[in-house]
Image 1: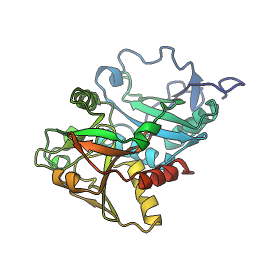
Image 2: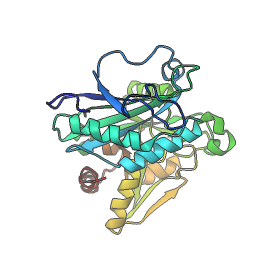
Image 3: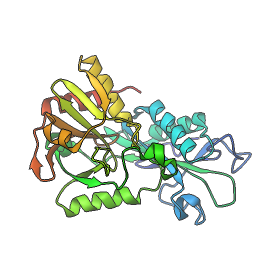
Length: 302
């Protein structure tokens, strides 16, 4: 199953049968096979390409270990259910992820992106692949902090309940709006954005979750308001509870952002990035707690 006898800088594994609910692409082939990462693989009628109809996960890899693997696989399954996609074959995905990590050149930090689409239109067979590569370094965001702006997402905070067809809370491939939000943040002189509901509640970043410190308590927006439950945020809460810090999921307002003792955006690859300004206004950072969070995240075994 190995790609070569040597390690490699980038790795691509293509799944033969991403879901047991659909036929394999090749009945005689293994669960997955390695392929040249930069060659052409996706068919032009694949619904992931033509309509953004699919799901994905991005995992941090530290010293060859895919972190929060089971949490990411669980979220992949949850996203598939929201999009009415076939249930992923988690054993095949797990094996492909672990194999891709094992093939990578040794590096302190890398990432793995898993993608599953509805497949070529009319085929009834999903497409799936796992791509692994070294991470872009993020030390400055973890120590110097980031500037964010708040952007109206255009939905009420209860949109997941009132309009489930909008797929809020699923990690789908339809990320054009998220990327547009990041470009708008750059146009406003910021590094990132925080989405806010039309009725004034803090949601999430385009590729991250929001975390606040109030006194000794860590708070994040509730996960039933149309946002993606964060695997990294969940691990930060585990870290906090081990240190005796209370944690909670709450409805958070923009005023809560301004009055918090410290703020972060947390995500799988960047980890915990302290927020230094909100809409141009300086905000205090807790760099000691930030360093402890990131040390704990990088040390995760699973």
